[in-house]
Image 1 (cartoon, rainbow, N blue to C red):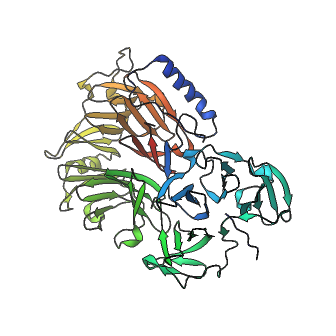
Image 2: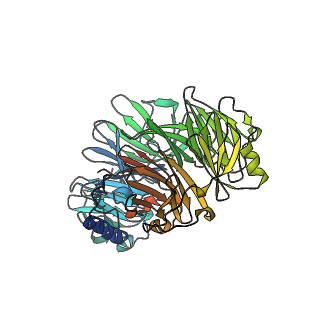
Image 3: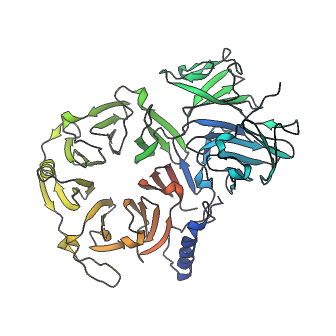
Length: 568
């Protein structure tokens, strides 16, 4: 019986971290590229294909395909996942970082006649000859379609590519995607369709009775339940030629079906949270953030091997699905800031406990956590509290009373040289918790250069929004720009990063300053105070936090975790 089945441009080199040989012609070239960058439709030729890697919350897994090396999984939120058929390990995914216009993939299909990988996404139909980068796009209106949701299946014959909608079949050139005809039924019989989609998936397509299902999952006729009873629908089924078949689910899991061992294994690859907002590093990345309607989670991510291990909220009694806004690691504990309470995770005991109103945790989102001299400082816009790290008892501290009595709003907390600095109502205060003393930061200790011409300015009247401690430097974000406090100098004027809101900064090799903003990533030469580049790719909007680890820059954005190899 005939059954229908569904299913960057190359990136090259960023400015080297060693920029001591600063020639005008090189800078002019970079500046020229910066100007034309926004005109390009996708990630451009300055980078290698995987200079930018994007990892997100998977959402639903909509489609499955395979080529000679990989199984491909088209996802709702994380682009195209790739599983190596030989190592059985996930490879770097294909996302907007590789030039895809769509991040949500409805169908994925490998045409074995041409070697082309086709993707039906939320914005375009896209195809790649390399199956990695250099993606070409087809407009849906060129096929008289409104969106990819109208496409049910994708397949191919020896000479053509075929798309199927509810009532029509579209015949395309299988190399360039040009529309050749629209039919009520195909005019050739030998079409190989991809995976079986949910619209074609019948309850009796697969018999689970002969298989053992791992992790205490229960499989039914139309979906699967995990060990805690959370139900998810089947979305697609793919039968391969090597004895490993696949079933995808609406919750982001895929079921690996081994015909030889008669074993079914649930697999999940990606972030446990929907939007990552906080990251800490201790040999692995601990990533937390905004959860979804069903659960939240903390992801442990090996930045070298790209392996995930997720700690899910529905697996622990004291870990709810509430959103996480900040985190800090203290020995074998990780403290997480949530809405009006703190969650403490013991990494050795694998257990959680919460600290709330009874510990004086202020109302609102706990977006600031800092640790110094046995005390944890936790703050929201409404106040700050000091907690003894060991006993978890509230400390009767001067800083809490100071903020409350003056009705100040908290902008930031940062530890620097055994002292804790607070931004309170756009003014910086120094707190010595051993002495329980508070003092306004004395800006008059130094003079401040506003430019290379040594123009002086009274910085004491300036407004401060954020402070960052990096190595032996303390950087302050003011309305004028970024100030190096110890040098007493304005090192980056705000105009250099287009006056966008600074969310984080990091320094590389004492020569490059990376600034993350709500609109992109700026790279600045500290010595010459020149803007080397500004990247505002779609996946770099709304950067929340940033870390420099070896040759990588890790960024948390509204699109997920971005791993940038700036040495390639």
